[in-house]
Length: 423
Image (tube, rainbow, N blue to C red; front, top):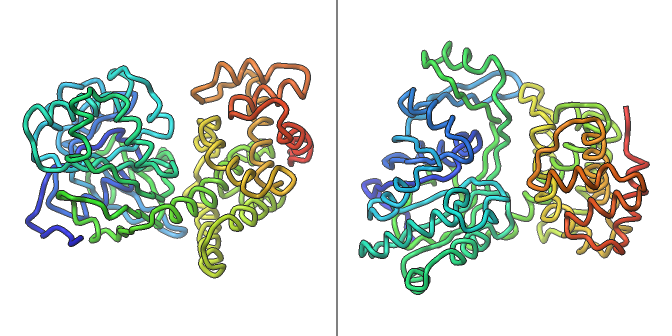
């Protein structure tokens, strides 16, 4: 498929605007040029208020190991709260809207049928309006969340909410496209706003801090218009799965392990975790296991994990482990459990078992210490974590990941919990 011409412009609607979207997908759309972006927030309307107050502009701080590069991203039109369903429906019914991107997190695809809380349900309303308006030009829905086959997950979530007529219309008019995204984007530090102001003059209430590395791989299945993302280094491919798995199992898998094992060991940041001798050894073990499941050349995997280590060690990025630790009950079933299964069981995947055990140990420590666990299953986690019997506690926690009580993973996790590094 040929890339669109520079004059082939349109509107992109984005659902779930947060720091990652602003450092990655929306920045790439700005670099592509020519397109307008209308974003909607996630759970909170605060981002809409802040961005609208500064004309949609925001500062992007690319934080290298030695210095910052600061630029202003100016691609956003009016930012809407997620609750403005009428605006979304109106935009999707407009033929000028040709692409919808989503960063609604893994749990956003299983949010139910209430448009007030469910992005797929809101999309279903918008697509119904597009059909009723007689729009014939295809629209592309592009998932940018950390899920293997995220396009298929999105497709199934939206189809489940469509009325019969729109479901019949869907395949002829809607492309649902998977993509793999990668750019570490921690929360902005206290000095970020001043950094943007000093470099650009922009008074920015919501600056974004990110790393130099960025990667976006997209399925090449657009029938309609799209931004010229190639200008931003985006790669289009006919085989997205191997890119997804490489990132999910090596980057995200290591992130998940460090988030829990690092905190259990008494450190708070990614650069501290990868520098901790015992945590680093667990990461190496996890990488060895995950690599064995990836159909890629060894030298390519060597280069990728070496780049990951450099990214993790960046002392100026200072990504907090507590941020990465959110939503473990959603992440572990897609990041760790499949590798354990493909390796042939817990005894063949001690590094992945360590990631699960670090989570069970961490949530237990948090709950018993009176601290919050940010997770869609937080109440059930809290109930299991206080159980006195170790087997009951671990079984209860693993059940929230979909692991049966009699699974050999239960005993493996109990044993691994005892071996985790502690302060």
